[in-house]
Image (tube, rainbow, N blue to C red):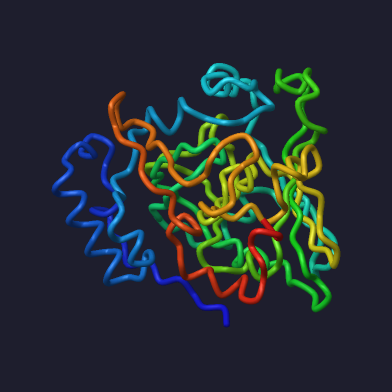
Length: 300
């Protein structure tokens, strides 16, 4: 049964950027928030939830529309025009149409959440997001009974996105979730980081965040959302289904064909930081019920 995620975080939990190095204060506040508010499973509560530095988050990125290097998005994403911005919502919805970002935000409650973020390349970071639950947006447009999946599409602007010149993937970038995944209270649409608006390299002005899945599922700079009764296309899955499954849940027991997923490296931890074990579902055990009865080595 779906449930509403309760946010008991305070401004102390989303630590101001200039205080993030005060490890003892941060860890005490976050541990209390996790236990009292159900922020995460016990695995997450025991893990380090100290937010990464803002510079880490905004300078070590994957956004191939701006280049394949980790620093390329920060160099080029300033070219992306993010205002005005609109999102087309279509398919099996009661109120299809093109919605301005301002119109959407006027109907949403912006919250602050700290999520671990795990990349398929075996690196991770902890990000303090601002945003709203995707379920609230779906309720706003009215999801019809036959809808089983939600598809997403990224902006396609060759004049502003230099990476589109290279056929790394089939453009535009697309992704998808099952409807119950999309409605899960951990699934959010992010509008900011550290109480600041999203920068282009992080998916401005609106991106998906699904914390129990590998990072490439959290599609950036969304311009279209489609409710459908068929499994939507997902760019990496279309490019190489052997390496990138549709579900792409964090699963240390299923290796990427070219590297292990059993451990990860925390970005910003220093040159000599030890790798740490990868947690199933990235530590968000509360989503396990979504996949009851499924073979997660087959439906990876």
